Length: 114
Image (cartoon, rainbow, N blue to C red; front, side, top):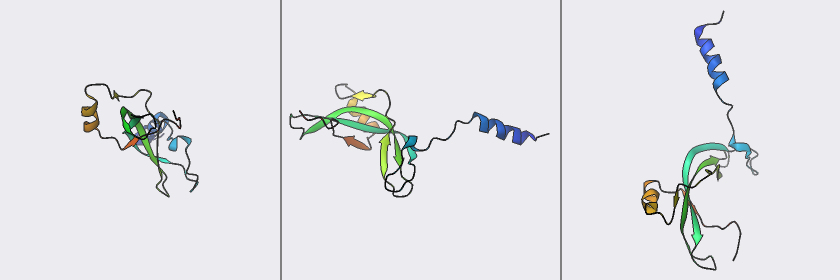
């Protein structure tokens, strides 16, 4: 008959979801899976304020996860939330941004040029 502690360990193992490594992302340089190093980081999405996309301003705040290659330390931001938590036109945008500063501001329109 098994001991109470091993029963608890077995139950814990059965109830714990499998560990996901890097959501299937691997480093092309090192051939290592990325590791999630922080969940829920804040990322600011910028928007162009001129037609030539040379000047950018704040647009939206998102939550995402930060991953890192364990060997070369390359970092990737992925796993963005389905919805942003703040938009530039909202009265409390600056307050939310100051309370949780973004780790990066992405000034890119997905390669689209006007």
